Amino acid sequence: MSCKNCDSPNEIINRFNHFYILTILYQGPIHGYQIINQYKQRIKKNISPSVVYPFLEELEKNGYLNHTTTLIKEKNRKTYHLTQAGQTYCTNIFATINEIFAPVCTIGIRHCPTCTCTIYKNTQHKTPNNTKTPSDAPK
Image 1 (tube, rainbow, N blue to C red):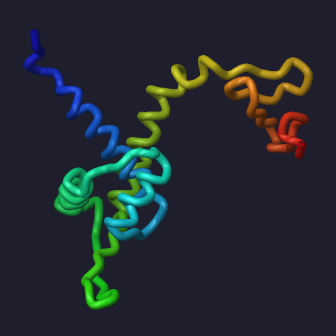
Image 2: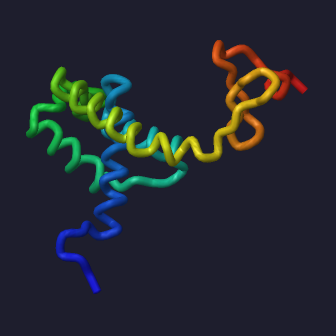
């Protein structure tokens, strides 16, 4: 049984890929190939250029992204950068995603009864003023 109004699992995953591409673009000007490499470094999975480049074209068509072309080693390289509208678009998406996932992501977070630092996954500690906790001390 399938839902006519539901996205397929692949479409949902593609949307997460798009979201992650936006987080990379938000950091500053970047080449498409660098987007693919950063994605792989951070997610530890490959992303197909057939996912990246059509999304970049869609963002550009909608006024969220511009590119400049530079000749590098006899090849034209496009450097992509968000427009002001693209910055706003990303900021709004990031805020919405944070509202949706923050309650889910904080389920495993505890607070230390001694120093009130935040404990992530029972090992990583973060104090309110970012000072090191005993678990952060060199061993």
